[in-house]
Amino acid sequence: MQKIHSISEHFLTSLSNLELLSLHSEILTQLRSRGVIRTLNNPVGDYAEWLVSHALGMTLLNNSSAGADAIDADGMKVQIKARRVTPESPSRQLSALRNYEAADFDYLIAVIFGEHYNVLDAYKIPHEVIRDYARHSDYVNAHIVILKGAILSDPRVISIKSHLIVCHSAPINEVSTETSSLEAMTDDSNKQEKIANGAALTVLLKAIGMTCFVTYYPRFADPHLSDADIIEQLHTHEGYTEKSCRSRLSKARKIIRDGLSIEALTLIAASGRTQDSVRDVALKLISSLR
Image (cartoon, rainbow, N blue to C red; front, side, top):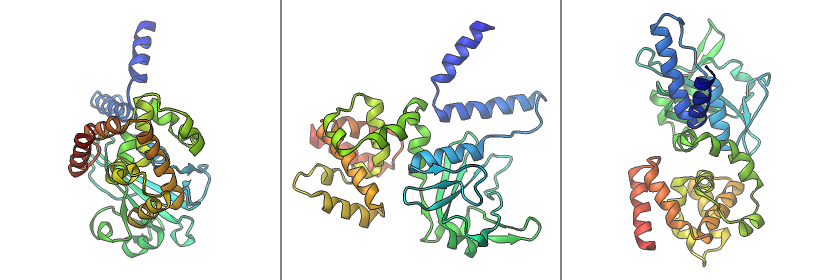
């Protein structure tokens, strides 16, 4: 038994968060088929909060906090809702939003997971938008949101799926150090410290955003463009906060300064985490740099 435990522990610690959750799902299904358990309870809510907070740089609040689950980098209150859909339960109805009129949160992050916890959809929905699409249930005295149809076409609703997928797919040892590592990096330390390995490069790319790095690479690499010009472009076209723009620019230029442009672009092209058009641009950039 001790030998089996040792092998299992080594095996489990080598898996990514996504692989662990997928394995968890398969184990529950097998146990249910054997009659050992009667339900397929899963960690959807807790995992969604963890994933969103890590991917978007939020601070999770105590469970007792009314109406909000996290605070974002701009101090806005966020409620996080998630649903895991399966062939047996395909509904995209989120759990009830209680006390909506109290406006305890500024926006809702809604995530739809697939059967094996893969991110199918994720959206940022401003508080005021919910009223236009949610229905009020007198039975539970709460607003009900279904994540499909007209609400997803509202221009005020923003897809954040790509941000979550990058964090979702990272090995656990990379993500667990992401927050402390990135927060500790200042412009001065960026100038002094070299990127030591592929894991550190992946963390930086996640913080910048792979699509952002590829799209703005010519600007990041242009020594004649001032920081102010690039920050203005990022803010205007992508909607990032000034703080986020500065952070992304600093990290992107660190990668370029350390001579890791080709490595970074190759990692992005091979990641499978970006659209084909972004991958194609990355490959063209690699070709031009060689």
